[in-house]
Amino acid sequence: MSSGGVADALASFPDRLSPAALGRYRSCPQSFYLSDVERLPRDEQPSPVLCQANAVHHALERFFGLPLLDRQPENLERALRSVWPSHRRPGAFLTREQERAY
Image (cartoon, rainbow, N blue to C red; front, side, top):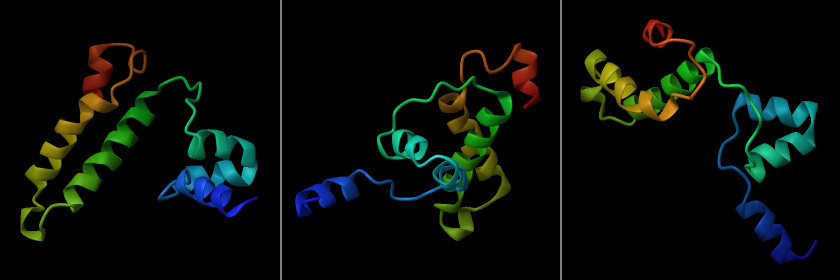
């Protein structure tokens, strides 16, 4: 591979790797490449647990980005409420009541 090819490959490599991404690499490097490097969409059925987990991770990222004195419980709740709409997935919840329970 030429030096330009290596640079191009490294430029598209993810900045961070999640435990799930490392697990994909261990079980199937091709799956890791397609989903985490090329970022091709995966055919996954959305689930309530996945929506909630992604929203919580996103909210915690925002919360811990705040100055230390602003890290109050109400700001964590505010962060979660602000990111929730971006993590809702059609079909993940059977009813609005089920979504509210999460």
